[in-house]
Picture 1 (spheres, rainbow, N blue to C red):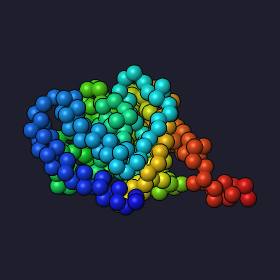
Picture 2: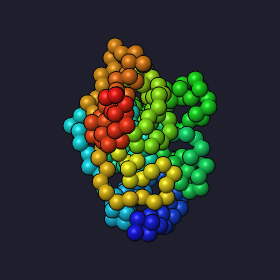
Picture 3: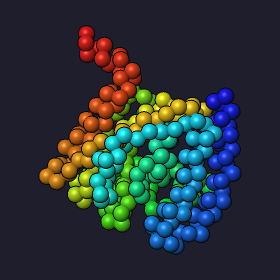
Picture 4: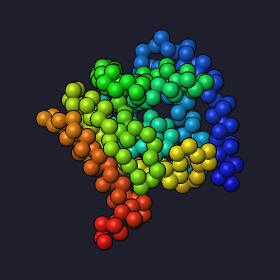
Length: 247
């Protein structure tokens, strides 16, 4: 049944994506916030399809932690789900993403019309400078610049060294950092076609005041909260780690 539901969901995306990519191109001259609202309808339709076709829902805890002003979001990365859901859960979201996504027919064309930051991950310092420059402008426009500091989708229970791009942006702009943990990888695995029904839990942590902190300290605080929250909410993914510690 999960396979059939996933086929129907994929078919739905195939139907709606080409016309929305055309709409995105047509509205590109409009102000960023207007473009975001119009093109973002695609995301809302995709999330509705996940709910009603796949049976994949989500629950959010910690909404009260969202600051009043636009912030830098550092989010756990397990699947493609969070790239959709955060646009529904948070105010205006501007992702930092790899520029290769722009090459995907229709989807990439529409993505390129959104107020977001496409970087070359091999560019090193140039990519960091791009995130700082464009990220500052987007924050000033009221967009929540969202970064996946792990840099790639990680299986549940695993992580890697957090990259500093998002923390660096928060440091140079003084923006608060919002850490987010979730278990989307339990239902929509990396590179998996089949999506499973169920309820994804999203936890929004207390925002981090970056004033007086170094980039490394900001990154460390965010990583400590995210990874700690993952272990608190989803301990079954860390049983081997706990046994090793106990031994």
